[in-house]
View 1 (cartoon, rainbow, N blue to C red):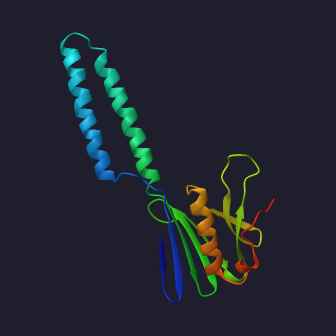
View 2: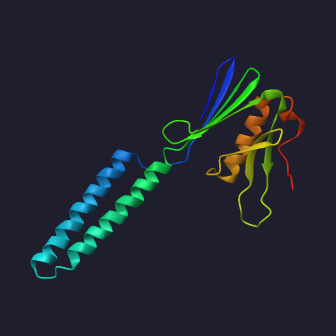
View 3: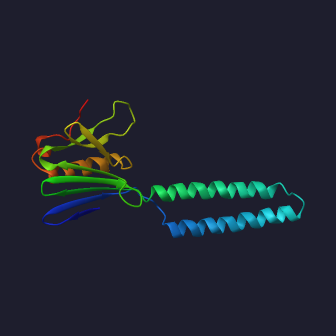
Length: 165
């Protein structure tokens, strides 16, 4: 998602999470009801070991859904305004923050040295590198690199989105 005003350009990056938390919770509760109904039925019939395993299965499924939902709340925000490029990363709010002078900032798209590994999109200023969009597809990462390069300006338009080994 890109937001733009006359003075500022903002790029908000987030993983593509298929389901919303409420939908995930409803699916989990439905599965829990079905699983516990079957497990209690087997317990009443005398097969009591089924119930603890059903509980363990539901606990593991709940943990996996929670981790997935938490990853879906991750955000990377790049703000380009005036003379600064600001980058924030975090889950609920920004937990990491970088601010670079726009004039000395460049965009790098580094292909991987290993086969079948994704390229890395980096914002660099001096000796400080910040990786962006590690969860993006290759096409999205390349498109974002071009957009960032165009938005940052003179340093980026010098052909910095290229292979750097």
